Length: 120
Image (cartoon, rainbow, N blue to C red; front, side, top):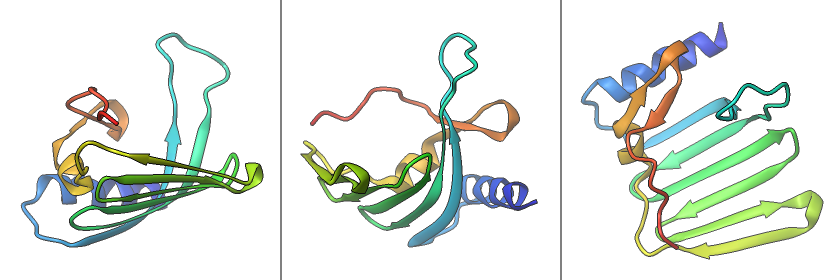
């Protein structure tokens, strides 16, 4: 039921011309390869985002990890490894613009229209 409400809310946010400045949601992300495999990692956690250029992903499964994005800076913190990775991007990523450009796929999943990764 919770997943249905999240999908419904996400669909509404993407399709409706609303003006909002922040977002909070729990997520479940399944990575699928180009060929079927019995081992497809599943990630779960929470995302927080605020316009124009701030987002934070807190992964709880399969292992804790936090990803912070602010303006042109990205920090990935992995507490089990006692490690943080800092990356500076060539341009700021607007998380809300990415959401607005997402394209609906089968079973309510989304993917970005462009698969070109940002340059670092």
